Image (cartoon, rainbow over all chains, first blue to last red; front, side, top):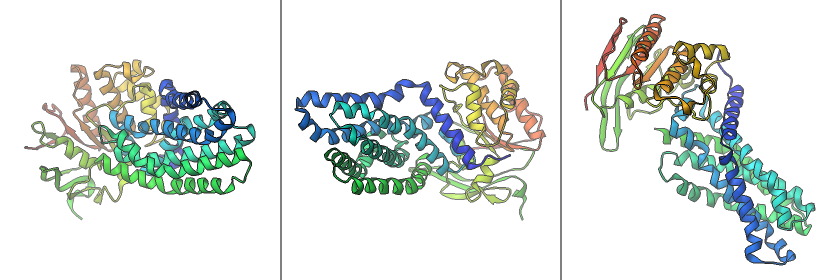
Length: 226
Length: 209
């Protein structure tokens, strides 16, 4: 009895989740980084609350991008190191399904977790609660897009010893639009103007990467595994 | 139709690694009910040949066919019939032996936990089923990876040094598994330095560096 693609997808997601929760320190590292950076910023700048509100979207988004970037390196690396990636590749399931499942699972434990703690950070940075909905939505779209971009970068760099530096170099330029539109959406939500334009842009980027990145990442993996 | 339609056929494989011409036109055939024992000095390209035959590595030149069809073009069909055990046991240290089997065999075919436990029992590591793989010894890990090969119920076995880290009883077990596999109409390729003391039909391929 062969295993369908959908079944394989859930099996890999379950595997990734179980692995993440067996290593809570790895799970917490990006979150702690996110919290520390956003806490240190206001302390270092010693601003008034009104001024803090001006820089808050930028600080929030830079911290979110960098902390997501921290965890991207581990996307395929640990599986490549212990040889389980080869077993996955030879499992008879398409490489694209494997990439999608691993990336979605990775986003659930890093990106989504980051979105969920962002109200705490938002409060600390003086972002009004009325802007929280936009902040959460834009961060969710942004981190998901970044996970897809990261999957391509991680696929290209697993064979390299200092791959994470190159990974940052590959992903950061591609992630700049996310920073610009993400921070803009949050800023507009704080000032009470229309956020639709920036959010549409983020959503478009997210759809674009969701549809194309799995194929690109699968091709990258196939090349680097040889 | 040539002779190769019933099994695995390797035709004039050339692989370069940088400047090194690792595999220089290797050709061989493995029919059903037959084992191919690949040996040779270190660096002769044994593992490279295994990776080419598994489909992980694309040769610069040459063709590997399974049932007369290219393994690259019919990747999914071939992989469904394939069990590959690399030199490293490829286990997740944080998962138990049983979970490791569940998540890798489960992608190939639907199987019940009892079946997987049965496979672990067959390779003598039933007691380790619920221990995380990281606490197992090298020999036990090898046995778990053999259990995975058994549980996949594949017709093509590609094993890289299956005797490594195993005690006398373990080596005996590998031989038994291989013989049972061949007797059931399977075929296999085994990379090993030692002689395979098997009663079944074994062909030898000696690679030179």
